Image (cartoon, rainbow, N blue to C red; front, side):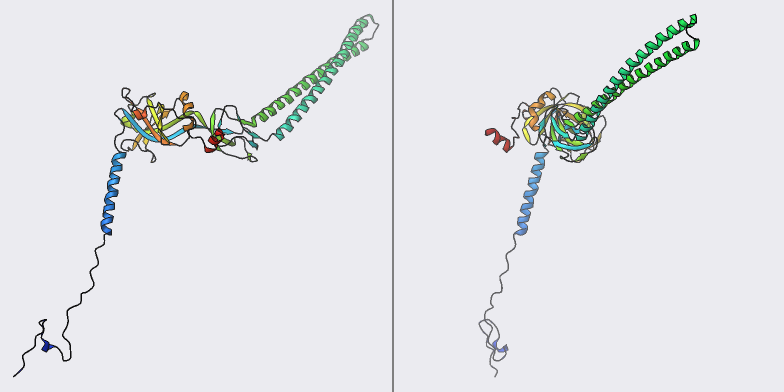
Length: 377
């Protein structure tokens, strides 16, 4: 009779196990699953923060910060640029000013080499002396010729009188007449030599005056009160006629161009009040006025943004700083400084407090450390 199958605690048929095999034990636990990465979550949170910050910045930057009746646009401070240049070709001898220095009208800023001109001047002065000597000799010859002519004229008168009485032959009388005419011609020639010598003196003096003028022009001076922007050459360089030595900024002609849309430009009048606020000194708004409005619309430059929505066509408006106020803001006058220009096209609208333009910057606003230290000593 067959034996019944033995069933293990695990419910497995031990009879079905191959002979000599052990019954399987409890299963060993496998490797634990890796925890999910938090990197995508962090990236998502960072993206949300960045987007929120961008939206907030956009809302802050595009918020209307001007009351009605005002318009603004950004631009760069500009000043009328002039050049100190040579009138004649030559070699630079001395450079007496550096970039950034403020120079007064008539102040010497450079000198050209005038050794050749000075030599030519000495030559012209020697020609003047020689011409004066020649003139004195010619005047002496005039005196001699005049005396000879006077004697020949008197002899001619006597000969003619004697020829009528037969005391002198007609031939001798004609000879005396010829001598008188020759003496007259020689006197005229001597007088012409005096005129020629005088002309030579005038020519030599004119040459000397021209050389003196060229020597004076070799001393280069600042035409107006200005600030040296660029030093364009160095001592020893040879420049042609009209060669530029310095570029200067006219401290009495400072302005900023802003670009405004047509709906605003049509309301802006010449002479309207304006303010210039430089990024480097926002606490010192500079009072200005509208001195020019472009008669034709133009495309907005890529580097310029109006306070309102960017327009394809805008008008260029010039904000001029009054000359009588420029002396107070000279430390701020630096060509190329970025800033904002504001225009009031509604005369009844009061200026915001931050644009009143009553504060005046101190004179040492941009004083260098070395200058400040020297002042303290």
